[in-house]
Length: 162
Image 1: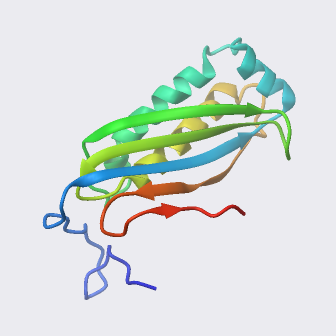
Image 2: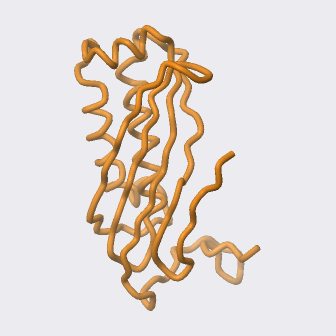
């Protein structure tokens, strides 16, 4: 295992110096899901939720969150993102009715965008919860993780199934 990069030789937290790292094309994809009652999923699918277009608003919230990640995570670098895209998939099967969210974030820079992708997914799912909590307080956000990342010195990572 390698050392944790956000601590100096004395064990104190610090922002990693990326000044000497070359700018490369970086991509990260993260995913997660929110489980809910069948009626809640039907409400989202029909577009008739009292607060409006749940998935449209969740998409905008996720994009905004990716752009603000360095304001939320103390040691993240502010990045000029070149692309943030969120996709949603509704499913009645599996363990429970659910909405899955996948975020793809890209930049050209000296550090990766995994945190931005994870933040986009979390905030999009939180927005779905916020918009639907009046009818289903038992919704559960779960399985948020990085699916893949590309670019930089460490190369590519693709999550294995399971």
